[in-house]
Length: 314
Ligand SMILES: Cc1cc2nc3c(=O)[nH]c(=O)nc-3n(C[C@H](O)[C@H](O)[C@H](O)COP(=O)(O)OP(=O)(O)OC[C@H]3O[C@@H](n4cnc5c(N)ncnc54)[C@H](O)[C@@H]3O)c2cc1C
Image 1 (spheres, rainbow, N blue to C red):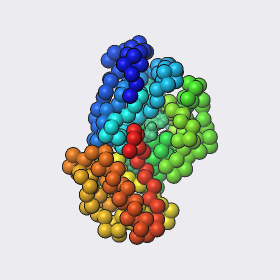
Image 2 (cartoon, rainbow, N blue to C red):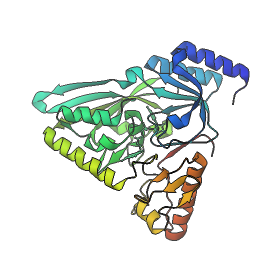
Image 3 (spheres, rainbow, N blue to C red):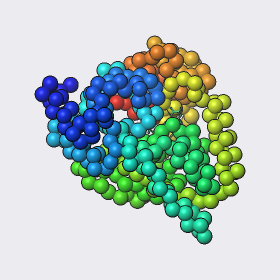
């Protein structure tokens, strides 16, 4: 971690840009990720405007400090040693949603800030009688995280309804990317390579009877409650779906259901989930992930690629 002078400069400059109440030095990251593990962030900051975001990125560049954007932390594992640099959390204007309905065409153009929770967006669309985001209702992430990951469930994905997104590049430039430019595919987007930050996303939704929308959402909710270990902290499905297989089935068939390392465990309800069963550390989770990968590779010659993203040193 940086020397005292650097730390003092960073703290003062971050506070100047964001206000003292938006800068949290040595913030425990376990408060901000759904796995509820991990060490502190050197600086955790809340950014309310696009202008502030540009200033924070410029500062990091000038001071040669790394920065990382975090949404709801529902696809992240943070190292027990913590994270160097600035962890940026979007709030303020990034929580805004605006919508324009074109009644005769039966469509609704929605613009949602990157910090908006997917469930809230999906619910709001449903209440207005617009379809296309029912799948997103049970995904505990933000619009920014979901666009980056092209999140999806029950046959739907972000790619189906998104039409464009505004991003900020590493140089602080704001760009409007049309859907094709986002290069969305299974748990992948162009931002994974570019490091661009999603500022807001545009969706096109169509009309559907509200009763049908809510019936679909309810069925997904029930399916999740029945099949997923929602009572434990986790990051959802730990691994991506390998081509031609299901990760959970491979793990189950490898005899790993209930396998524990420290406080981390392969869920007995759904083997695709590594859960924080009992005060796990990030190291426990990481070692269990590695153990699962090695076992499945040995038994089935299939490489499991984590869907969960790692932050800090492992
Ligand atoms: C119980 C549970 C169930 C889940 N079910 C599903 C599911 O059905 N389908 C599914 O796809 N996922 C699922 N997930 C995983 C997760 O919710 C999604 O991947 C979600 O989209 C992550 O969003 P987030 O805001 O939490 O992102 P984070 O976990 O905070 O971050 C994930 C990645 O996105 C990046 N990121 C975040 N915000 C931005 C931004 N504004 N611009 C650029 N990059 C950004 C981060 O840097 C990081 O690399 C589940 C997770 C849990 C805990």
